[in-house]
Amino acid sequence: MSGTASTELIGALDWSDVPDEGRRRTAALLRDFAAVTCAGASAPTARLAAEYAVVQHAGDQATLLYDGRRVSATGAAWANGVLANALDFDDGHRLVKGHPGANVIPAALALGETIGASRDEVLAAITVGYEIAVRAGIALHAREADYHGSGAWGAIGAAAAGARLLRLAPAQVGHALGLAEYHAPMAPIMRSVADPAMTKDACGWGAMTGISSALLAADGFTATDSAVLDALDGPEAATSRLGQRWYVQDLYVKAYPCCRWSQPAIAAALTVHSRYDIEPASITAVTVRTFGAAAALSRRAPTTTEHAQYSLVWPVAAALVHGEFGVAHVLPAAFDDELIHDLAARISVEVDPVLDSAFPGVRQAAVVVETIDGVLHASDLAQAPGEPEDPRWAAIIDAKFARYAGQPREHSLMSRLLS
Image (cartoon, rainbow, N blue to C red; front, top):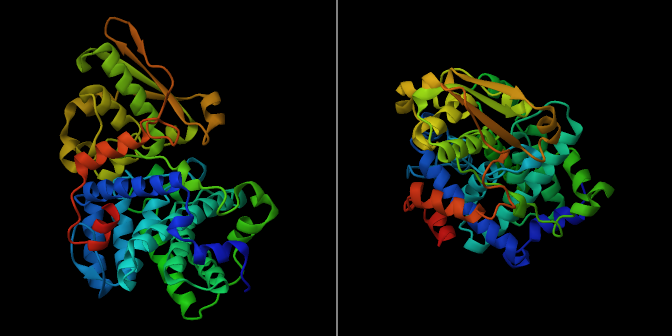
């Protein structure tokens, strides 16, 4: 395998090569990651992942975030990737319908800590990882009829981050991407949407597969040609050439800890709550008008945090009852809230063909609440807060960081990245 323009850039990109706005976005996304992982540390899936990594991936190369124990680099990438996506509170990109950061950042942290990389080296690796992950996701969705979870393409971004940290030669970079693409988890995400479980977006597997691929390529392990390289350097990439088009500037962040598809409806419900000040007991029916993917979310009463995260009716009901939807509402202690359960049972969901045709580029929803006096209280069409063009984008991260993030003192590299 010979090198290409993209594989040369992946192995050589410096932090100073990233434009100012790209550097600001990457730094802000790291703050978001810190808040998300700190909040997620109490989730059952995160605790299980940490214990598994300690037993099955023993070592002293890298640190488990908000845990402090040390394991192998691959084990830390896996467990911290699970942690990053534990609450579905992590960043994403509309066109890939998934989560680059939860794959890329844990991989870069684990390998960066292992080799003693500098702050700027890790920041450059994270940025190039985002760039490759999004491009790989766009390419995968274009060629595959089935919708795969984030690990399926996030692994390739994690491999790019690892290749950059190891300063692999262009041909080795190609092998790293090829190995990650070949071995990435083809997670059938809609199964986890319909029947929510800890399987989720396979971000831990993506992070682990990515750095494993980079380490193997560094030692001479070869791969077949990668389809993603065609997407990176082929004629269709002319308007999105690596190093010219910066996808890291297009990442969204989440104000609520649940699937992105339910968040427009949550925003609409919060508008109704603040605008009309309706007593929950007076509500006779709620209608959510949304797109098809959101309508496919679970409507069962949650008994696990995954059920709550992949629900449409639970967060909408919580928003109407309490005027907020936060981390506490997706953890088991909230599942005894009879007010939320009662209102959730009165919520119906309608697919709007216009909203459905605009998905995934635009994701909107509206909520109509009917009260006992027969009056209809309607929201406007709402988008989820934190879209890349949202002027509140940075403020959402700041609020999450202030509310949820603790200083990861046990992880010196992460502390330096946040400084």
